[in-house]
Amino acid sequence: MSDTQHISYFTAEGLKKLKDELHFLKTKERTSVTNQIAEARDKGDLSENAEYDAAREAQGMLEARIAKLEDTLSNARLIDSNTIDTSKVSILTKVKIKNIKTKQVVQYTIVTQSEANLKEGKISIDSPIGHGLMGKKVGDKVDITVPAGVIPFEIIDISL
Figure 1 (cartoon, rainbow, N blue to C red):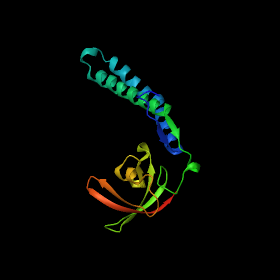
Figure 2: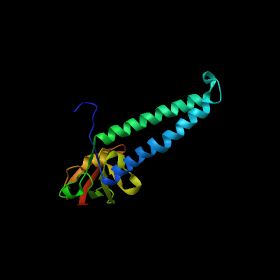
Figure 3: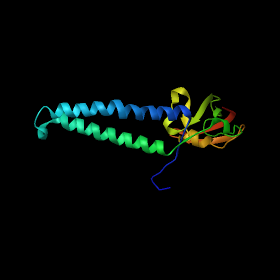
């Protein structure tokens, strides 16, 4: 495996979302950008044609995004929820934690960076809290450094 390859783990939902985006970009978006370039080209002198330059730039950005998605998909691994151990915090587990100082209880699902969505209670394994909780067990107390300082948490429950 080369240094440029980075294995990314996805849930079935996350992998489908990625594949759907790639399909959309390759079919609809690519056609749209190609049409924009053709329209701009038809307007005459390309050396002073801002529309043409903008369309070509959009095409370059689109192709870069497609290449990145293809690379991500080629190194993607599906996470099987049947093999997840709920005795400790790991990816795809729901973890209920209590802020020891404020007594506030929150529940998060630990997910990959690409699937993180705080509004849905999904935090990234790479976030300070997600990273700090990994491998911990129910009853463990852990101090997690976040931008606002250090927060002491107690793990109350781990489930799927």
